[in-house]
Structure formats: structure tokens, C-alpha cells
Image 1 (cartoon, rainbow, N blue to C red):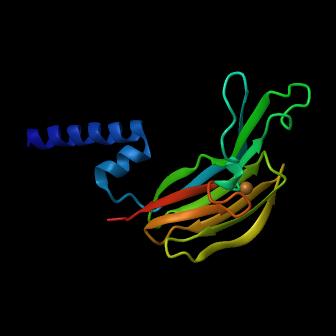
Image 2 (image 1 turned 180 degrees about the horizontal axis):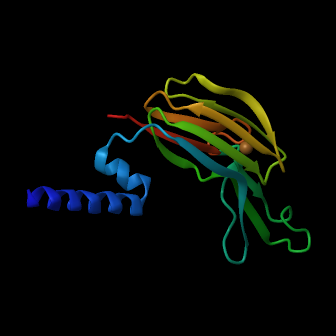
Length: 175
Ligand SMILES: [Cu+2]
């Protein structure tokens, strides 16, 4: 029965290894970890970039035409003291891609850093509302919780800055 003891020891070592590496490894090993609660923290931010016309010509078309989430300040508008300066920006959720297992409860907390108002909604993989359209304002923190019952992408979309200000919660099927 010595091999049983050995196998138990190996089993114990595997278990310790799984614990040491945390939940993702554990899920990869057994593939069917029990549903859990996932706290996700996001910020709504605006990234900005600027340069001057002596370094690079401004874009041929206003990026705001590509997405309401993109901003553009042309030479002369970006900085009156520096007429050659032009500026672009993009609103985004950070992080913007989250993976969970089917059946997990998501507890999403979003803090709005940039943008006075964002009209947001969350939809399930079938396009139905998880959270109907609501407005999030700068400087406030918002919390939404739901159980990810369906496999596939749940989408957080900002209608004010569509289509680029969005985040995806990809729900992997539970075997
Ligand atoms: Cu927005």
C-alpha cells in the first residue's frame, strides 16, 4: 500500500500547487470549479495624445466621424498659445475584457474619471438588457451585480461614446 501513500502525497502536492497559483490554474485543472463571485473594478477614462503640425500632419478626416468615443481638436483649437498643436482622445473602460465562468456572479464596480456623462447599458449574449440604459456621471462610483447564466459575451456599452467605448464580459461554458 506504499504506492497509495505516494499517490496521496503526489495528490497533496498537486493540490498545493493549484492553491499556490490561484483560481485560474485550479479551473484549468479540474474544468468545473464551483460558481463563485467575481468582483470586477473598472474605471471610465479618456486617453489623450497630442503633437504639432511640424512633426505630423493632422488626420485627413475628423476621428469623431469614426466613433463618438473619439475626440479631435484641430490646430488652433487644441491650444491657442500653440497654433500648430492638435490633439486626439478616446474614451474607454479599463479593463475592457473580463473572462468568467457560466454561473459566476459578477459584482461590477465602475468609477467615472473622465466624461461628465455616459449613457450605458449591459446586454446578455442574446442582446437582452441586464441593466437598462442609465447615465453614469463623472466622480461617481456605480455598482451592478448579476449572475452570468448564459455562455457568450455580455457587453457593457456606452451609447454616448459608441461604438468604441465598450467592455466585454466573456462567459465560458461550465462543463
Ligand atoms: Cu462614455
